[in-house]
Length: 217
Image 1: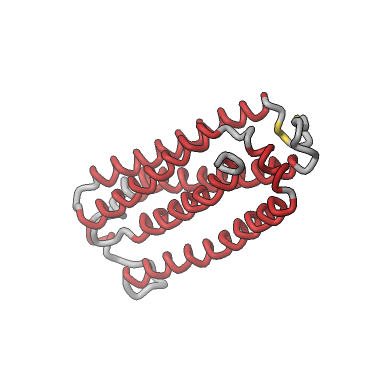
Image 2: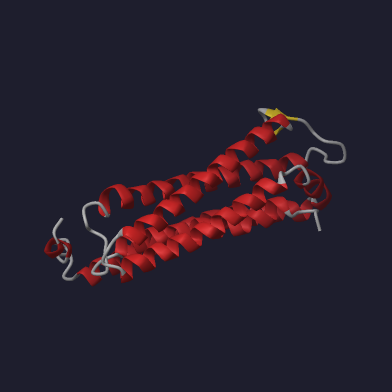
């Protein structure tokens, strides 16, 4: 796509700025709904954790702390690389720096999923998969299974959202940037992806202490 084509907004918008603002507004509305969804899930978790504090503490000690900690570091780093990618898009006419940071972001996201997949394997070996492969541990009680229900639902939904985020980053790399549609004149689509990525990281900031730090202090 030529430089002049980049400066032409879609037919329903008067300016590129209006087009970008609309895209960001749409993402924020979507994330409000997602926040309500995850908020309800975490609220329910704390409700049961307050009701069964001992059982949840015993169950949580079987969570693989090093996997959660490594993934915590991976996602925090990916937030930095995503911000650097957006800054590169805004400041640099050449897409090279932006591409490097986006590749790093996607790679960190994939590394997260690899670690999480290995953790799921360890969880299965430890028999903490509710209904399918679960064994009540001594002192845990049947209420401990509620902790693992939250674990699988919360981390599973988070992994799905992260996979979507990786797909959006790859879409930017393989389609929008290759066609010359992202640059200093217009980089709103990349900003929108960055907002979504930050949301996914923020969800993990709540899941990590809820799952891995319970009963370990």
